[in-house]
Image 1 (cartoon, rainbow, N blue to C red):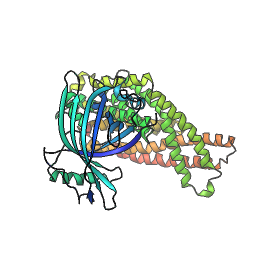
Image 2: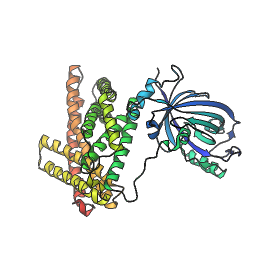
Image 3: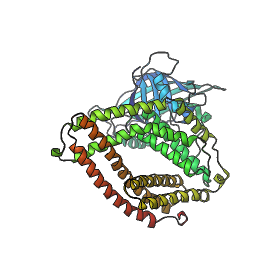
Image 4: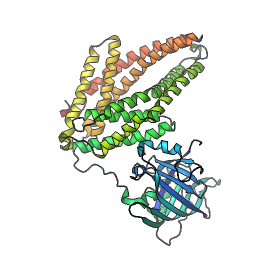
Length: 502
């Protein structure tokens, strides 16, 4: 089966009083014409696990007959007003979710079977809204809906709603203009994100936010839930080969690991940290290749053309294409493995019933101080070690400072809902150190890659003078970054920070 087609859907839904007419939107957001309605009868079957795992993740999966876009639709949340919609045409067994879509949501279903959970019939009256050139700006639909959801008790409901969906090419900011006009015309914003969520209602409980007086455990679990959500969303992106998705997945992995390690006195992670470390290693080659190639091409672009000898860019394309393919194959193999499925199940179980310790019951400010202080202390000790080091050992020590800075920053991110400006200022200074040392590590890795490229290029008869020159420039750049780090570290040590941080 062909790969799903993708589109970003930007829309808002509205309640409308029974018997009222459809608002006229001519003159709003550049609309010159509001077409007469075109009627479509839509019949959609919705799929989820019996425990509504997709709905809990904000995901909708349906098979719809009728209308111009009949087919299988998988909708993934992007923001409050945006969802990414993946579409496959009708075909095959109408009662079985296509394998391409099943695999995309594996991190959510955790291997549970996808079954029909609801059916919606919509009598839709669509009004196309166009500008002076006849181009579509948006579509306003008047939907008359009847829905049925099964389970232990059958629930049937019917309602009417308006839906304003922007054309994919339209400015997202136009949603607010349409919103004001529709509210002024008597419509009211729908409290439901989708027709399905309205139908299933409280069968999918909302995730509770932090209480007014959170415990330390409340804060840590909330941070873990947020990063687990990011991990699962990035999982879909990696499977679809979306730009930057591997990077986003690795960031989520690092933040989960860091939070579980830093606040290990508050929550027992079991084997999850080790398994997250494994997953990070499996994704590393794919991301490292991406970063290294982009950086090296930018460095080449900065050179005068007379210093770039031979067809180096074509050589780099061949070299990194092989590396990228191997990295992606390894990443996808990891996501398809039973080990990865076990990890996702372990994370799900950990967040479903968090194994909190007695210390986690302390008020947040009191309970989070000691772990944060330890993270800051480890960072200071790592800097002292780097200051005493020389040569290759210093490069390794600075890389360790970077990792400790990252962990300290992530710890501060967890505590942001609790502490004020002083911690935010310290976090900002730590982030600057992390960024500088990240650039420094890029020069370390870059020089090693350049050495490999010179050897490989020489074997193919390439003139490797340019690689040698870039190697020397990276060495000089590393010295500049070490000096900048020293200045930034003074701001970490002497700058604004909570007194209890030490």
